[in-house]
Length: 260
Ligand SMILES: Cc1cc2nc3c(=O)[nH]c(=O)nc-3n(C[C@H](O)[C@H](O)[C@H](O)COP(=O)(O)OP(=O)(O)OC[C@H]3O[C@@H](n4cnc5c(N)ncnc54)[C@H](O)[C@@H]3O)c2cc1C
Ligand code: FES
Image 1 (cartoon, rainbow, N blue to C red):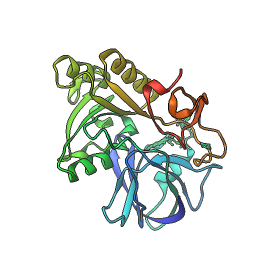
Image 2 (cartoon, helix red, strand yellow):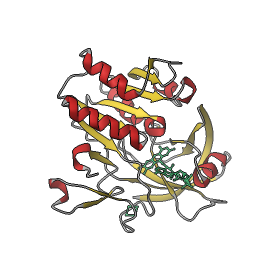
Image 3 (spheres, helix red, strand yellow):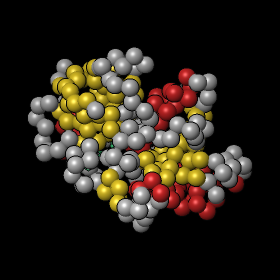
Image 4 (cartoon, helix red, strand yellow):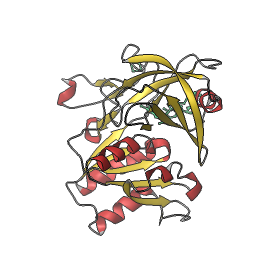
């Protein structure tokens, strides 16, 4: 695990209120689903850094980027930083999406799109095209969608019907199961707002698909010492212990491991 100051290259407007914050490397090799704790070097307004999935990375690590939506003081400070300023990064942290499920169907909502760009690039590099289902309230809210052009087989949904399938991304997934484009026994990787992940997990359970969720739990330290990020769990890998630290054993869990 590395903690160091990187220089901000640019803050790219992705539309829909989100930004890609690009920093100079060297970015360490990072697996899709792993995350970093970030803060600005100057004028950081809150006590603790904030967690973000790595969004993109140059193949040689010369730069990396994070998809950030300003929702509070920390994210606003990151998006307000100017080129040349320092961004403090700690990572890579956490466990990635399981590499054994190379043909997983990725389902994303909002900034939950972030972990899937690296996954899509890795798939493309090995001659495959990832299936990505991406949902938002409106076309404008599908922030980052252009970055996936030519990389994935994309199916988008909007609540207002302004782009792609008219409805929720869960309804899109359900329709794809109904018409045979997605089959029982396939694996889903999902990241997005909690209600959406809950709905996707429920649908997968009903339709006989395995489902892995990348949680966006509140975090404090990010590396296992504060117990501020625990979730209730069950299953063999936790050796009978009913709690798991999202920053250590997560953020990716199989849905059936999580206890509500
Ligand atoms: C592993 C991981 C990866 C993440 N990746 C990304 C990413 O790629 N892009 C991105 O934009 N965000 C990501 N997040 C969420 C991001 O860390 C939070 O939005 C950020 O911590 C908010 O900090 P803040 O100081 O701006 O807001 P705060 O002032 O802390 O909070 C502002 C508002 O957002 C709510 N909020 C804050 N954090 C969360 C949360 N985790 N879940 C639900 N509500 C929350 C608060 O209740 C409050 O209403 C990720 C989180 C985790 C754990
Ligand atoms: S955030 Fe401190 S233990 Fe996970």
